[in-house]
Image (cartoon, rainbow, N blue to C red; front, top):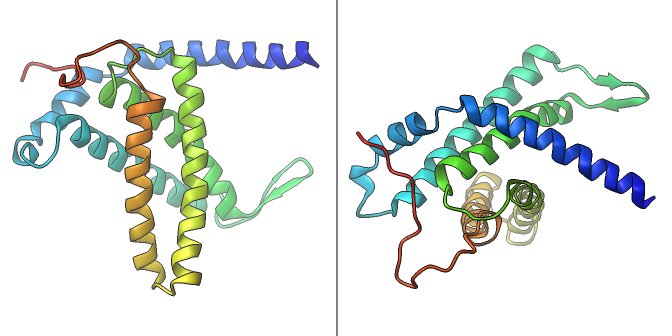
Length: 199
């Protein structure tokens, strides 16, 4: 049993390393940072640049996720049940899985290379922690929206807005201090080191 678990972990690590190297090589990291930072000046008195990059990357990845869900549900699956061997997935569940398979790695890479490039943790540790955080955020979305709607009788759309605000705040703090934590000793008053590009 231990040997099988070890083999699975080794295989996942090997696939991750290969995927990360290939994507990182072609990822226009500096161009993305430069593009995001171009819109930062009007917000510099309101938000630190890292928070602004987080909002930009997270927002863009959320829109990508919604777009892929829409395309998958309406045009790829055409609102039909997806059969995979003995399993049958309802179209909205299958569309969620398809969009998640794209938005998860893109979200991870954007957070790692654009928002929190100064993290000293290994890539595999970051990937595991990011996946764990995503699962927790999905559960928090489910729990909070039920709490607001069923216990506090808040209108569902308003409940969704409150839930999103809480989960986004939690996600940002968790990614900054856990998922992409910089374990190197820095001055208590120092700002986290962010990659800067020439305009």
